Image (spheres, rainbow, N blue to C red):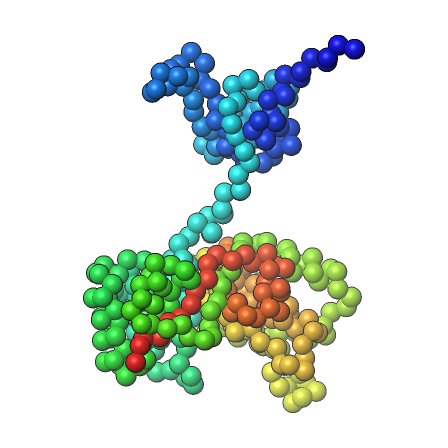
Length: 323
């Protein structure tokens, strides 16, 4: 029996592309017929975009900008699927994302050190908050590290505060501080997670639809400017607070903070009641992005927020200066 003719698209096996990549983001290296490359051989070019069609003779790729490009399969040299382009939110730098924390502490002192921010709360209530009493050491300090570190130490010594630095995990700045004797705090490593507020609200609605019955409690919203607090009280316990959370609005970014449910009231849906109230408040005020910090050893919270579509943007750690 004679061999069957090879299909025209058999070359897809060499580069891993084919009809299965329709709808996916791909990169394709293709020949430019009739043109000569810089070394005298065939000219080639790369194209990045979404594959919108694939048939026996050609595929079509839609670049992020410009018109769709149809590529004959015979001109494909190599190619592969690539991960989706990060959302605009995830392309935000760690420094810019972390600056939204400042809205939570409107009364703190802030002094720039290049792109670093020295932060100190002159009138703290209760314990010192690390996010309000540390150097946000992200970006370029505008000076050699040794000079920048001396400025950090001087700033906190003048305020009789321990010198702390908040750094992005595994960054060059973290390495530089560790090389100079700074040490990790044994607690406080946290992920900044974010998502489109609309996506989180959809996830919350879907979760409510799957549950049997409402928690039987409502959250009361207390608002002061761009700060809000949602509180659930139990009338059977003299209106004691059994669940609460806070939110801040900074532009169109809604930050969620300090979500807490009393230990003997957990697994009753109260965290969701608080979240729903804060998310609705943010949406009414024009927020489009929701973000929060969650400590990396808090497995229940990581599971909760991950299930709502909040994805990790970056991880931060705190370092303390050597004695």
